[in-house]
Image (cartoon, rainbow over all chains, first blue to last red):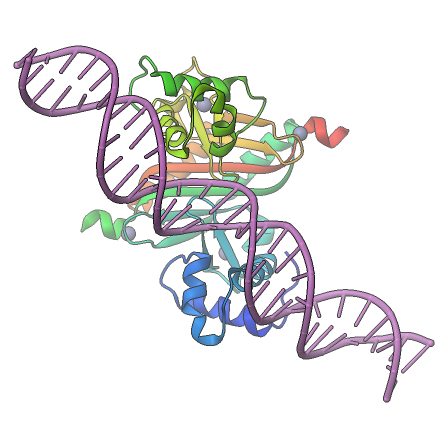
Length: 134
Length: 134
DNA sequence: TTGACTAATGTAATAACATCACATATCGAA
DNA sequence: TTCGATATGTGATGTTATTACATTAGTCAA
Ligand SMILES: [Zn+2]
Ligand SMILES: [Zn+2]
Ligand SMILES: [Zn+2]
Ligand SMILES: [Zn+2]
């Protein structure tokens, strides 16, 4: 994660699309939303997404090939631990949390196996409380 | 996960391709390997993969869109806990492990948030011990 | 100011991953 | 044997991501 900085025009457009969405968006959904702003090709979206990921402002959800704005943009939990995502398959809601014990156990495993970790994905799929009670 | 049973011809071919591979394979790589056995279309692979996943004989690695044979085919760890995968981005080696404490912490979170978990993905990307020392 | 460098953007084409729709085949139970 | 369930064959299509190349915009030192 690089230090945060001013966003370029395309980066701002992509970030705002994610920030105003109520759930994760695919790159192509973002593209369609931004056609009115002059976006014409997937690469315009992917390049902006890459930077925003680098800045830690958004996250990629590997299990659904989609992206979300970070729900804790002003905190620094990203530097301290791994992030887990609970993704509701019914409504799409994503809840982001960090657990020191999980982080520690993963680190224990990598340390004792000489594994140099670069990125860890933790995604819980299922049905959120709201949808389950409905 | 359904109970294990006899595999059909296509399922066997796909499983054997994964079992003899030294690392994860994409569906299209499997397809290419099985063209000599009469495979012609992606769906032949994906249908077999779906069944093998259902039987718990293989795993899907979400972060690399690939599949591996289960490395503990005769154990029953799958029924007890979540499985984590350490994936070497250099050599492709995948190590599978299960940690009761991680499993417990995830369950704690889902229970206290009313989240009905269906599947959990834990994938550690990085460089394995062998590759790191080389 | 100019030149040179880097970052950002535009665009088309292509690659990689996955599913839909529909037809046919196989197999076991009634 | 007839029926239903499961498995298979095949082409077309849908979805996600990258390659390749050209252009534009900022930065900074000579
Ligand atoms: Zn975050
Ligand atoms: Zn929900
Ligand atoms: Zn396994
Ligand atoms: Zn390795």
